[in-house]
Image 1 (spheres, rainbow, N blue to C red):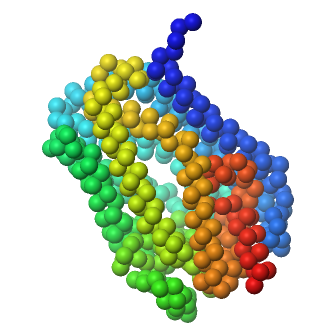
Image 2: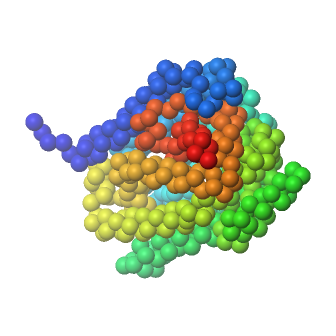
Length: 419
């Protein structure tokens, strides 16, 4: 029997990865169909059979669309990489420009544009079919199109900056570009975190000071108690696009601000809003934001250095059956390999994130002195957003960045009993 080639092995490995993902998705949906009508402990009187039925239907519809989109994306990726199409595309881009920087920029910009165009039908279906059907969507087609054009413009601008800057650095320092490129990416990341609340976010949303009487004073008092300095407490007109609700911190350092969706102000009382914000404060006080940033940058440095070494090796094109590839084309091959390597680490990343969420919940319970308020807030968020209350345990352990909401509520209720 003839031994398999490396190309065939990689193809089979990727099929295994995507098949594993589809299997996990399948057992999760089967679990929901089996238990979706059961009211979780602690949700009695707030979640009824009708809401559970809508939640199940909503989750199933979202998942079906996600499955179709995933299958289309994976088929196109496999065809692009293993049919020789990558080589054809590479040669075509090379014929347009002989410049290392310009050619590389065109290479990635056109791929990004193609990905955006492929996503449009799925985005339209989700927004104007599924979200409409379940009463979430408030967008007009005009607003959706304006958002799309703004997003594309920002994406292309940032991608141009990152790609052109990185390629220029590579050309300037062939031996140490991995270090300088990492530093460049890290600097841009921190810069964007600083300017996003003032430059990017206002392009999509209208921000104003919180209008709810007395709420800002209560929030500032809680922040002072926690020892966190916040620049401004804002509300955003999220209801122009969706009835989904949320609240979050944005920015770092002195530009930190609290942002509340206007939808959440109509769904929750002050105690519940304060409890949600106390959870976010917990992430700051526990150092989760900084730790995640450091972990991400350390992982990025390792990844870029490994990419540098593999590019020096010169055997990347042969892995997918090509004899020659340009620098940008080899980066695509590296990103594909990276997806294979990252898959087994998904459960660990999810576990680490869930662990931090538990810590933030505990901090919020102590800071707000009202663990029951956070529990009721989570119940309301689940009800209003039709969140899946019955994920398969294995699926949740593999993918969930947050503990299943029913588990969070149960633990918070137990904290109430201990007091």
